[in-house]
Image (cartoon, rainbow, N blue to C red; front, top):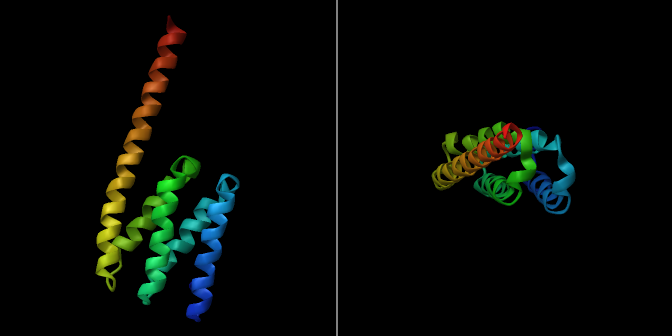
Amino acid sequence: MGAAKSVEVRDLILVCLGHMVQSRARSIRSGWSSLFGVLSLAAADPLSSVAKAGFDLARDTVREHFALIGDHHAEGVSCIAGYLRQRPHVDIALSAAHCLADYAKLLHAAAAADGATGAAAGGAAGG
């Protein structure tokens, strides 16, 4: 995205990534890092339409495929934070703040569920 000068090319990149996430999310595995990296570049785009499309894809990816992201949540959080840090698009930054709060709730709930599962497994094994 960083080297693409044409708006049409940057939009096409985001559309292709969106289709990939929609159709092949279960197969992405280690590709989440690259995906979030490209979406982080979109956060810095001076054009509002590109930044908004990137943010929408990042937000929807986290909401719809949270469990599949696995060990790449740090990249996801960093990506959403990139939309929060950018200056030109205040409305996107405000949406990113809400998204980051929702992401934190999802991470907390997942950690609590893992803790409860681990405690139940440990209790069953010890008894």
